[in-house]
Picture (cartoon, rainbow, N blue to C red):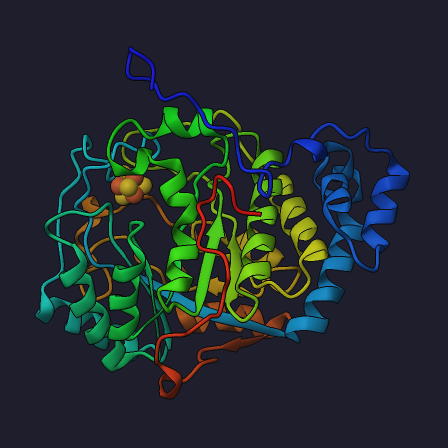
Length: 391
Ligand code: SF4
């Protein structure tokens, strides 16, 4: 920390740093080789992410689709998010419910949560992600633990997308019936990260980076990672997401690791990204990641417009949210629009979305896991060292 209170960035740990792959000179032949590679690695990923690969979208799409079929068949796993609370004192520049936004604040009480769960259950969905903002008195661990336990009475697969916590806290939630976490690093570029997160606990880059490890050590079965596309150089962030996923798969080989591709969407506050990612770039990154991580579930949410979701389903993407509400209490009350974190783009209901999938020859999957197996995982790992040094 400097005298002016500015944090001095710590270099990324070697296992994460993508520098060696950022400045390769990529030729057309490198991209063609990467598309057909039997066991593509970082060199191939760098080629497929390069601006030059934008000319190869069709062969990349064909390869990504073939790999997706081989590993996931024609299935698309469905899930839906549920906002428990939008109380947050975080200072994220890009967020519609940051502490300094005049958003209407709300938190679900038990009766409201049960009401929401009944609405979700009636849609036959069996995978749920519970969301909050940063750690707040209104939605801290005891509240989350109780909410997970209630949601688990209705739904087989309950996950959380909340704030980073300690291993012991993750264990408490796993004991209550939580299966997994989603936690995006937002950006792996520490300079941008510092600029975007103006105050609060989220300024601790490395605590967030280590959170998926802590979650898996704490008994979670799955972790979802990703970068918020638009904040920093997307090639840098995509290479880091890949390296982060490889690290987690190496150290927790029995755990499930998935990758999401959130892009900045319109939100209260009107933040505009410095590195906008258009639809073609998004498609290129999804294809590149599918080719280089053949069996990792790739997730696309209702942040994306209908045409993008329809185009990507089965072409790399194997898991999608559906019928999402980004307001607190949104499933049983459509009127509370001012509590939303960001605008959703695909507002189709479940029958409409499933009809689209079936027209494309894809099969929506509502349930792929059973609560019978709901007990905390025990991964044997031999590394308990911090992200700054681990290999
Ligand atoms: S992104 Fe999350 S932590 Fe940041 S302000 Fe929004 S809700 Fe709070």
